[in-house]
Amino acid sequence: MSTATRVLVVAITVMSFVYLGISAALFAYRVDYKNMYLTEQEAHKKTTTEKNKVIEEQDARIKTLDKNIDELQKDISVRKAELAAAKEDLVEWKDKHTQLMNNLTELNTNVEKLQASLKEQITKNQELNVSVEKMRASTEDAVKERTVLEEKYLNAQDSIIRLEKNLSTLEKQYLAQAKEFNQTKIKLDQYIKAFPSLSTDVVSAKLIEGKVVAISEKADLNIVMINVGKNDGVEVGMKFTVYRGDKYVAKIQIDKVEAQWSSAFSIKEFQSDNIRVNDNITTSPY
Image 1 (cartoon, rainbow, N blue to C red):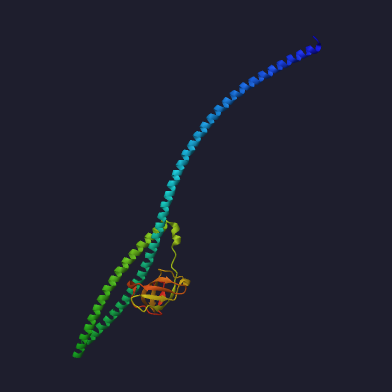
Image 2: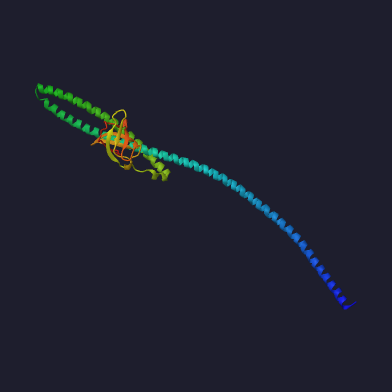
C-alpha cells in the first residue's frame, strides 16, 4: 500500500470520526431543543392562563365601573332636576318678596294717612269740646248752637270710631303681611345657604321713572302707555307705582315693551284713583 493510499485512508478515518462527532453533537442539541420547546410551551400556557384570569377580573371590574357610572349619571340627572326646581322656587320667592314689599309700602302709606286723619279729627274734637264748654254759659240761641255742635261732635266721634276700626284692620293686615314677609325672607335665606351659587342670581331691581303719556279711551280695556321702554331697562311683567304729587294712585304691570315706550294694565286691587295723563311712574315701592 502506498503512502498516498495510507494518508487517504487516515484522512477518511479522521473525517468519519469528525462526522460522527458532529452527528452526535447535532443529535444531542436536537434533544435539548425539543425539551426547551416543551418547557417554553408550558410556561406560555401558564402565562396565558394567568393573563386570561387577569383579563376576566378586569372585565368584571369594567362592568362594575360601568354600572357605577350609570348610577352616577342617574344621580347627576336627579341633582340637576332638583337644582332647576330650586332655581324656580327662588325666582317665585323673589317675586313674592317684591310683592310683599309693595304691599307693606302701601299699608304703611295708608296707616300714615289714617294717623294724620285721626290726629286731625282728635284736634277738631278738642276744639268742639272747648266750644261746647263756652256755649254752656250763653243764651238759648247759644244752647241751640251747642246742640248743633254736639251733633257735629257725635258725627266726629263716629268718624273717629270708623277710622280707629279701619286703622285696627290695617294694622292687622300689616302684621300679617310682615309675618309672611319674614317667613319668605327665612325661606329665601335657606335656599341661598343650600345653593350658594344661586345667590348670584338675585339682582336688585333697577330704579326706573317716567310718566303716563296715554290712556285707553275704553275704560274696560284698562290700558295705559308710558314713556320708558327697552332702552331704559323695562321688561314685560315689571310693576310700576303710579303717583300724582305726593298721592298714591295705582299699580300697573307691563305687558308690552318697545324701544322708547311700553304699554301696561292697571292692577285693580291696588288702584285708589283713576290714572291720568302726566301722572308719574316709578319702580320704587313709593
